[in-house]
Image: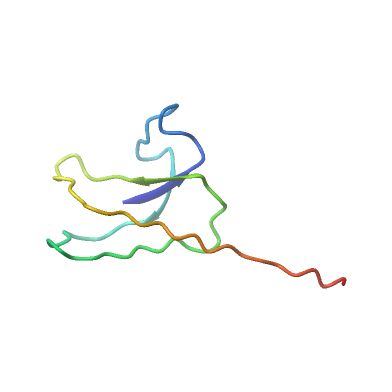
Length: 78
């Protein structure tokens, strides 16, 4: 499960329900498999990305990449 928050994890531990969930993989990810989860564009801006696994899961991953796509608006009154 991938979530977003503006609260530092050193201030409040990320627990399910206290952050915005933007993606969840529905099954087991195989060894050497790449999974891409995309947050919807209508979510507000957040500062921290949370990767959370079920308590029963063995959470091992070697890389987490985060890409930010910014929206730019032009002023129509130029």
